Image (cartoon, rainbow, N blue to C red; front, side, top):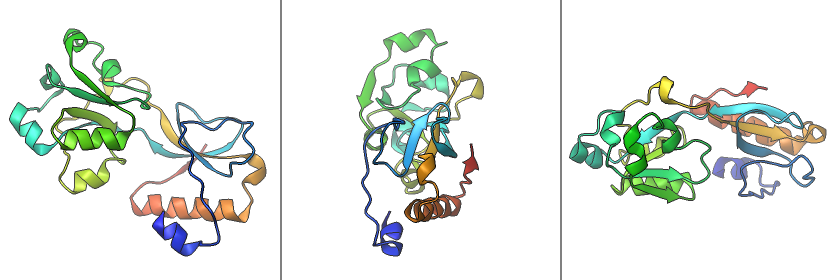
Length: 190
């Protein structure tokens, strides 16, 4: 956001803490939503797939010799309350999941911090964890097989149709797409 504020100091930004935008909301210019499909009431662009991965501190992985999904047995699984998929849905075919210890956090960042502190194995989006992965605070101990993944939501940029041509909206969309592209993410029209 710092680069947006520097480039566009004339615009105010109001961030709301919700997962989805309701169609009747009038005061919103743009929303970034986490949902299973695009909302037909808005002009939408898919920003990111929800590429979920297991995340743990390198020390935790070494201590528990965690190299595959079976290695999670008996370890604390860290989940985010707002995540639409969970360890329980991924591990549904493993009978031991019912006996697992869980730690539930409100936000992904809190789950990542808990994992970095060695409290367990978090489930999170690879892009959202990229900074902590790059810094070596977290690692991905194993890949989750696609056959174990339930349907995954996506992150969407949603714009009320009557606002999509507004200059401030176009400016923010261009900035966001440029930022994502610099991170190797291409947005798709929905």
